[in-house]
Image (cartoon, rainbow, N blue to C red; front, side):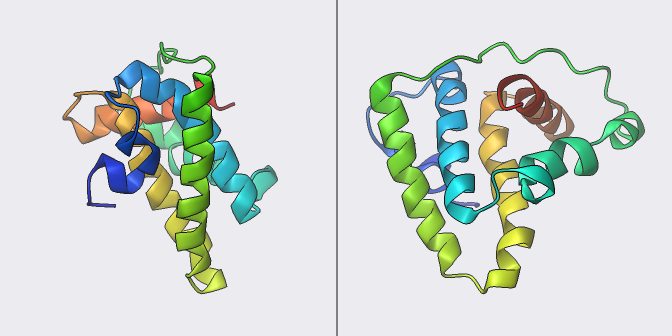
Length: 143
């Protein structure tokens, strides 16, 4: 997770450059494919649900002093080649998670997705603002 964007999101190693908008439009295809491969695409097993509704639910947001979240601006379908690259990258990451002991996938997928989603904050440096944008992105683009 500490390795740079290419290690976290392997699809960004091809067809560059990757603007924040392009990345934001492609991440849903990546996350959807990854969660399906890991069997965590729906219900309470979905780590996006945990992120937006539990880890950063309304009470936590208030405690962090976040204003009401703004709608994330860069949602939309990815280009076909970006979607293909994202699906291929999801297989690579799912394979890495398959190497984990089964009971460890759940605890580690959340931090991985937080790192992934932090990339939609562009050049923001403030960790609280980065996570607020990531949660807004989940609610706006991945709901």
